[in-house]
Image (cartoon, rainbow, N blue to C red; front, side, top):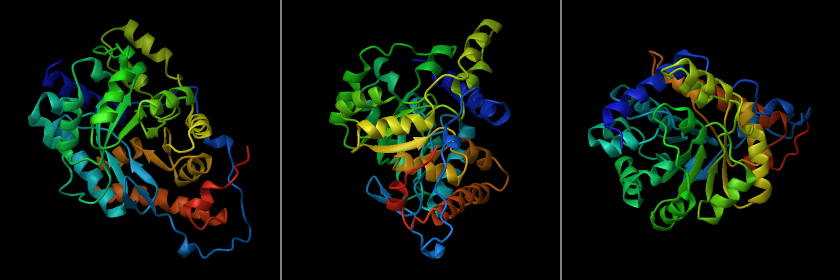
Length: 344
């Protein structure tokens, strides 16, 4: 296991690169532009009465939105996570923290993830890389991550492409499902399977469901590309060239949502990967997601000098856009939105 200083340096690299470089997926789009919500010229609604409430992990959300996992494991990340969490609390949204591997390795970094004091009632998600189950982590480490932040669920994130092009990558994914099954069986909170920007197919979702995963975050292609992030960390031209080749790799977000919902009607499905406005959220739900998630836009706002206020303003725009889309589609609540038929 690399020491905590190495991991902390990598986390700082990731924050800097995501904020300062063009790390969007290249040549691939989320697919949202291909779909159109039906416009209703005479909605039988009072827009002020539209209900965007939902439940997630037994807790109420005022809008179907998750501030997705981004950072932690470096002292500079503590302020970002606290800012995001306070905004989530104000807006009644869910939040996931970044990978807690660094804090499991070095308890002194735990504070960079601990946000319950500013977000006492939101659904809060712990996070570890699934592949770490092949590198010495077990149920005990997963429990430690959950307890560290008083989490309602644990994300196991899948990032084979990122690991494959990362200079320090862990690339032994062999036999991983058996270890995930043990975690699902023994951990007292739900396990969420999440990609990091290259999508989860229907076949992979079925394999995850078979071992006990009941919540899946598709994290499809079209938003931030982590192979592009790692391209900026390469020590040589060869590594950079290999990473850049995969900037368009993966399953677009809309395809992942549709594929998984078609084969797993009972799974709780999170639509993420290039969610950039409230219309994207509306389309994700109409395609089959239970809620949507966004990351980089919230991170950009979190480092604004206005902090919480900037994040709240950014996400309020998303929620207002969602409400307008619902109003103009004659959807008074999320059940009606999920029942819509989108045209291509």
